[in-house]
Image (cartoon, protein in one colour):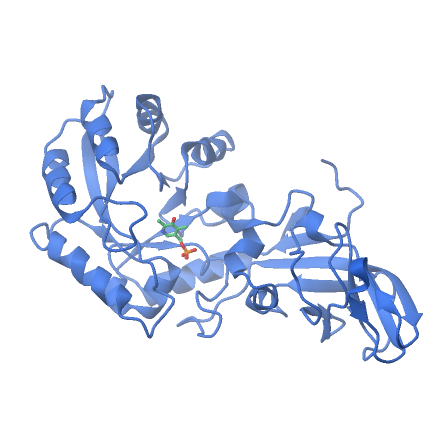
Length: 361
Ligand SMILES: *Cc1c(COP(=O)(O)O)cnc(C)c1O
């Protein structure tokens, strides 16, 4: 799709990405970093992020093999972990060919790996289900698999991993319980490098900073918990901007947008911006959802349309057609928008559509 004329765009700040990655290395100097670039790097552009973090993040992580093959086709060379693993022998062969590292999380994947006829041994990440009950082997199957894989011709290095269900909740003891379950299983395998933490795990749980940190949100410059600062300074890597394309004055009592949801309580000035749910701006945004325009936060007024949103700019002076608003980014945290839409930052970032050009700076 061509977007030569479109001014609505997501500005992707490569310096911010590198800054966040370097900060993370300084914060946890004993660990290596796997940068999760699944879902087009949470909307930032997988190629851009992978290319930018070359030399800083030691490995990349994607959900499934097509995402990894795309990166290879674009010339990305870092090792790539397939977080959902492989689902056929062909995929395992492609791992050998392209230097992908499959997660092995189910009895079926263990058997398939042991039975495969591979040209060379593969590094793998073996996953324990320590309490999330989504992916991973139970303790007994994990220990058995570890013993089988350690000596097997198809297997090179092994990293032991697990995933936390509630690491962003520092008041919950769930993470501590998961860590204890993981460490109990690993007690007999001290030589094996481990990876337990996502962004929230590494930020808030010091004991989770093991050999490999798996981080997405934090590298994109967003704190893993909307109400808790990250333990080091982050710079948001995405700024979503859209221009004002119309301005009008309406009398008290007049309504704005579909369903006439918003009604002016006083004579009001309304600005229309060129972004809507067709771009990934959430349709569920409530009246009052913050938007940053000309140095101030102004409220959304009226339902989000496919291509447009409307703002109450009555209290702003000097707004002109062409002025650019920030929907989220450095001036306005994506968390604030997510909160006003009953969702989370991850969803807003990953749902940004291909209709929004990414401008890499
Ligand atoms: C996506 C993903 C991560 C990264 O999560 P963030 O919260 O963005 O840091 C870590 N581990 C696994 C298994 C993942 O799928």
